[in-house]
Length: 396
Ligand SMILES: [Zn+2]
Image (cartoon, rainbow, N blue to C red; front, side, top):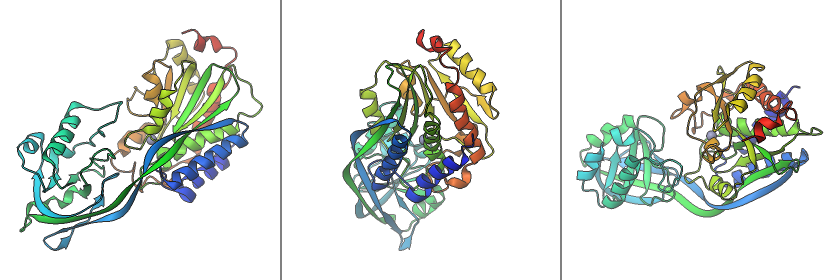
């Protein structure tokens, strides 16, 4: 079966017609309504799981040092500000500990910007060093923070952190270090508006035992999110279109998570709070269809029999390879509960973090529809012959 027409239609709708779809925004709701409509048309029973979040509005930022404009953007979820203050550069935890920052603009660089700091209330992974830096910043209480990282990452992107934050490129560091006045004027025009968003949960079949296929529908605020993760959503919608008339020993549940790219993953937390023990397998799809890349599969909490069964399907499909488990993403929700879990992504996606991913460059030009088609076909192949080897999944 040729999936490319359907995949292209869904990709175009999500990336072009809708575009950036951060949780809590009107565009996000448009994406939720679109996928819910497609899944209903496929005959699935669809429900929307509502949760609270914020709609973060960004109207731009302005930074002036010694009378010159410096290119700057607001950190995602930042509070607004309009201040003029003394600059203070800090590049390590030690420098931060010794700095006097109250009322100043703290310029973070070097070691402090080597990776994004986990949001304060991010539950699944939060290293001690990140917590220490955030706690020090709150204790020192600068009027605002500017991060100058070597990547495009927003080092602080946290709606629960209440010091205004802005982002400049590391190339701008000398502007601060060589400033004659050692002062800057920073304006961030942003707004945090209380909002709601929804996970989409669709069921095919009425069995109690379920196999879940999931992908996240939300994006970061400034990206069309083609790889991350319109491709995964489009694959699941196209997979849903292939189900009609088929019978399976398990209920097939299709979950579009809403919040993987939101600072506190509220959709994932809402879903977890109602997670049952009826899952026999979970398959999460995120970042597939990348041009010039194989597709990868990795296993979590799977008995060897389950791995072997799925690896037999892998061998029937060209362009899919097994990789070691990687610990970030929605597949960990299931894996951490001991549910046999499979994560599917593009093998080369890891090299795009901090550059293409989460930026406007994550657009449809990065997608190879043939690779996306064969990955979608793989999802279908995974469900072939289930009736005869049902025991493999129900044994444990
Ligand atoms: Zn993603």
